[in-house]
Length: 197
Image (cartoon, rainbow, N blue to C red; front, side, top):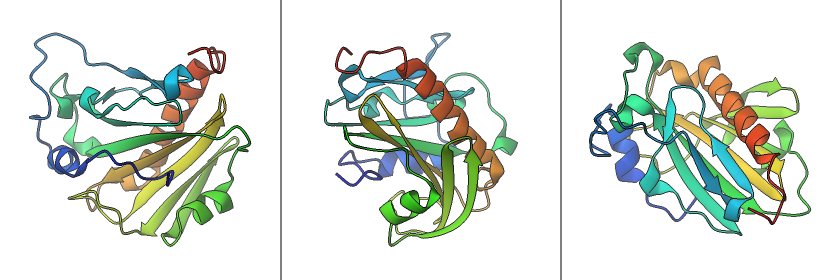
């Protein structure tokens, strides 16, 4: 599996999200949307950053690989959000790799080739790279994409953030959102014994 892609069809979801549409889910009428999901057969506990929710229909939880989509909760029909924050779609992909090591910025760049890396940010051992020229298939999104990955419980967890052209999420704000997602997910997953999920 290419760590940055999934067989899940996300084009329609991404187009609606990046266009600010809230028709992806039925209105929740006071019911909270999930901010977490179980992935990698239970070895990874995904924890959304503040203000973000998991799009439940997107979740595929397999022991060898899994996938989930996250978006601002208000774009999924719950809560309020600020248009100034910009719309973003985050994909989470896991791949079971017992021999994996924490990737640095160069490793992330190599894994996403032929996409061309631009800016990069470091948050401790977490490298986050923005690719300025990509050929992704996310409808309505800028060719710029923030990507990062980390290793937890025998899985490589890859995160990618897509936003519309000119969005503030393509700047440092997007990198910080991915850092928060990684930090929360690592903390939650560290409490799970690998293979016991």
